[in-house]
Image (spheres, rainbow, N blue to C red):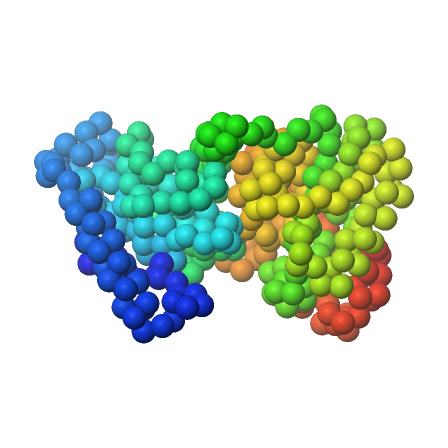
Length: 360
């Protein structure tokens, strides 16, 4: 099964395109794959004892599922799911296959063994090994595999994958990893007052009316903010990548909220990936931006109240799955590119964009 490991994680950037650099990188990758194979060689076990106590599961059962485009999985014959992560500074895309693999292992009653792992930030503290702790749930496993095609692993918000079934694990393991990272750096988690609201504002050249799954939510999305309990409203926006239209949208949002909630302090905040992820994760009240995978994993790890627009019906008819009593689906309009096209709104018409948001 080591032969199933591929080259999906090889990324060449800048000077890496030099022929000698490509050869060096390829050799290093081959060596890493070889070590991965060696790491996955385990002491043989009697198949009849692998699932002792698990009714309805054959002793030699080996799960089969999609192999993710951006992260390899390999179900060994030793009741272990072996996983090769996808590493990227696009955290949402990197976390999606990790949590899919973790969830599939849990549902299939397998252990989890990640070759390598995330190398930077709090994610390097996420578990790389877990023993099997449950019996396989064959029907749930089959359903989870069928819900997502291989391309959806990096974009788990597209479909009802296995990740939907392990939110408590996502919460506990993410918080443990973040706390380990903070302690190693002698830092504290973001401080909020009860009732404070954090709003994710994902807007850039690659999303505003240019990505079919992204769009700013109409300002009606924020009507459910508790006017008496909210002392502060923080709009989290990535610094340094603001299109003029994005800057105008955020200014309009800030002014709208300041008028709607005059007793609350409304302000823009933004910093490093770590700072922004932790703001979303520790927010007492979080409004997650439409279809952002970065916001998805921060929201799923959040122990407060999370508000989100529904999932897109790309691979499912149920766009509002049950994620717990603290996850609230809000049917607010979103200015997706298709909606903008139908309304005759273009990315260069900032006034029309803002008017639409204010009216919806």
